[in-house]
Image (cartoon, rainbow, N blue to C red):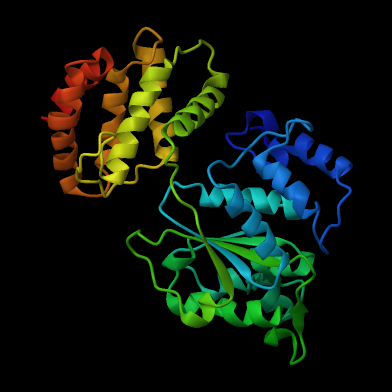
Length: 368
């Protein structure tokens, strides 16, 4: 059995610093602005990497709120950490990855917050074989991602921090205030001092089940930024079309993706997300996450269905079928709300638009 690792171009997903290595190299070569200590790029070049620069052939990677990106970069130059909050699927993790890739050249130093996260996951643990053989030593110590970030002067990402119990979250308070980590097992004076460039980017989905309120003391160590869903219809259609084209680029046979079908999908998502139709009629919003990321997932799955089981053209029929997997995740009431949406809003549009009629007819067997 071969143990040769697969080539990078066969990987399901590359880290941002690998995927856009050429862009980062071009930005670094053209970067004549001051760089904060420990940063790979200047704040201006970090912004260009995330929001794009046509002259340097740098693509835009985060959409929807340019001032938010500016504020996030400024926060990371200071002493406070950056907290990105918002509904699931609003690209908080993507933004934290992009910031880490551009600033530190490494987006992989990540602590994943869960109900089972312990203090060891945040600070350090031990190689117990070496610990028993040699006693406490630097060689036996297993550094956490946060430990590695402090030692190297890099950013560390703390995903879903509010899923950790409050007493585990509060481990960060002294680390963020003092910028040092005590290691009492190695001696009374053993400590790790954070190098310049170290900081924390945390994310939190505040509407999810299973989250814990952060203490006031910990909140004070962060600047909070809310990442909001995209509200501009045409802009979201453009974004879904672009992301879908990127996802389908590896398919052997092309899939025809009409813009009006993607527009129908985005309209449905925006209305069920906001609890209001384009005409201003109030409807019941869903508990399910109706984010742009989920819209891309639905469009991609529907396109694959069209490619492999139908004639290779995406239609509202495939959209209706794949929508079910998004809606039936969180609440039994969501199925009733979607049924009402199809019985009223979609049915009315079906009388005058053939695409909405196809959408309505395809959904009848699923939602009736």
